[in-house]
Length: 221
Image: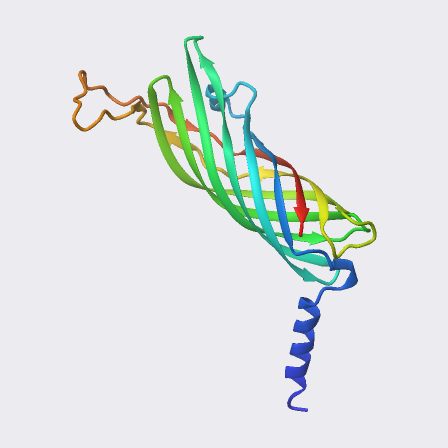
């Protein structure tokens, strides 16, 4: 009897790690698609009058199956930006390159549908440019999403084989305001002196938090 707790714990662990028929799908997923964030703060009009920050996203995830569900660990890469005209003479351009990692809890709903909840933590490299002036900053970001994936096996009625997937997620991007207070020209070469020393341009804080959405296609292997 003294070994009963150990036996029960081993049984529960095996049950959690062993995929059931409902969750027996390939563990590796590759995804690419469109991600965007909408910032309605007036200050964001500096770089986009339509309040959008469009991004290209590519990601990879690995799933740990559970009965009737799966827990995914995912990493992703983001790249994109926006721009707006400044008095019809110059352009204000915002560029973003970022990485993110997080987890998603997915539930099987029928044969093809998987609702999910996901949380991602990332790091963004941002650049704001105005004509010949520019500044780069880096900061942490976070995103929470609720979504649904539609999964289609490559071979019908074979859920364990490769599958195509279509993914739609909506949530909120918790990106802090980016502080751009030192826009300046690109530094000259070391052997070239700047003819007229210039003072950096202070733009202020650029709000980046807002509603986030994502549209992806992918493959499970």
